[in-house]
View 1 (cartoon, rainbow, N blue to C red):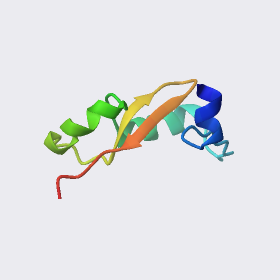
View 2 (view 1 turned 180 degrees about the horizontal axis):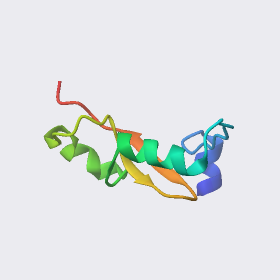
View 3 (view 1 turned 120 degrees about the horizontal axis):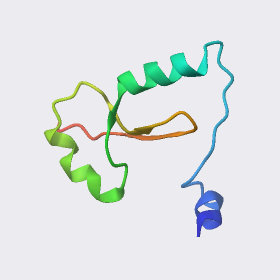
View 4 (view 1 turned 180 degrees about the vertical axis):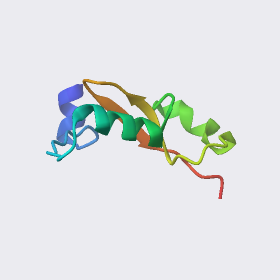
Length: 73
């Protein structure tokens, strides 16, 4: 199933080289991403969030996963 999702481009991977340390990148990313679920059903509660961050998801040292939240207007 995962291979099929990659083929139709619903799953994608991106590699970028940055001139900052990994710890600095993770710290800055965590400041801009609210911790939360990125699943399909989590969209319905996005409009009740009072956070200024446009993204939610999980940020870890080895990987991160995020998605753009839906604005109420």
